[in-house]
Image (cartoon, rainbow, N blue to C red; front, side, top):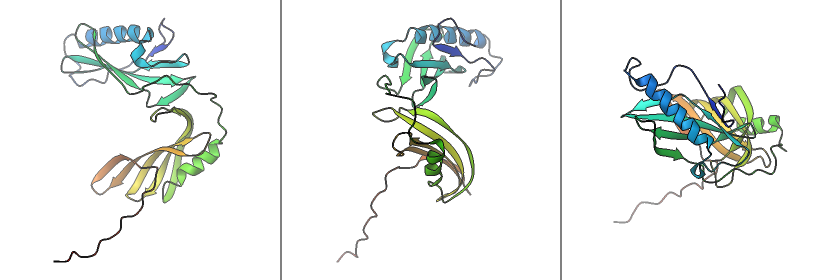
Length: 213
């Protein structure tokens, strides 16, 4: 539901909480924290590093240790921002006690028009697996994980990698074709494994001969 602030959209639904749903006052605490967080985010405080083309979507609040955690996703000119999310930590009175913001500067892109086609980016992404069984989809995003935000195509693909069955999310620079991020969920006999796959190759280590005694 969109509120009167213009830049904040509040997602309504069943709260994802770490306490029991029947806890007294839990709903009221969430409502107060969410409302106060929306007002604060709507004022665009400096610590959010928000540029004029950035907007925010509020997620479902969660409770733990007497605090309410209100998550936000960030968009830029309507595009999802990878690495732009943050959390507002509110106390029982609905006052901000802490914020977790990874983005360090406002996003400024010369254009949101890619020069690399979606199909070409998807092909680059599929090369990260040994064998591809399906492609869930590809969307245009802003990758803000590095020092300079980049326009990127983000593909989610399924197949087989070095560690077995894998679900891989790959961000490909929409201008240069460089792989900006590759995050995998691999399924092995021990269960799922999560991790970020390095985008730069490393030189193999040289084997050392036996030490003389």
